[in-house]
Length: 131
Ligand code: CTP
Image (cartoon, rainbow, N blue to C red):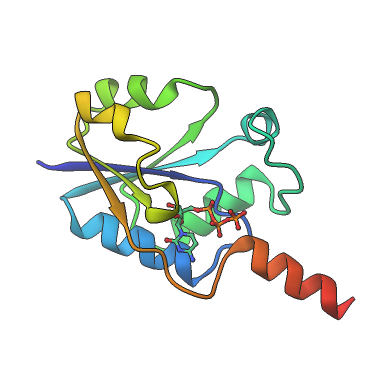
């Protein structure tokens, strides 16, 4: 069985997230989605996340694409996850191109094209303009 893993915050879940998960799932037989904890997002400087962890997990769950959902809680967890879950393919959107090449030692690393014109940041900016 080919196992795929991908990581994200998935705040204000949108079509770009859905497309990424769909394409990631197509790369194997079993998809694990790691959702960042609130504390981990803060630690890596990602402030102003709107949805709670529970909500963000629920949104990923609702896609029906994830076979398993885990939480990313610390720097260095990716290597531990890949080993622990016996991962074959690590997937991220191509805004991360090159940033995870160090994981090639452990599994295949694939950067998928991002869906154009949508992001959590853009949704927040658009909302701001309306208020
Ligand atoms: N992603 C994508 N296409 C988009 C937006 C995100 O393929 N238009 C992918 C990212 O590349 C990543 C995953 O979805 O692999 C989760 O991304 P995340 O950072 O949670 O979402 P963004 O919308 O990029 O959030 P932000 O604007 O806060 O960076």
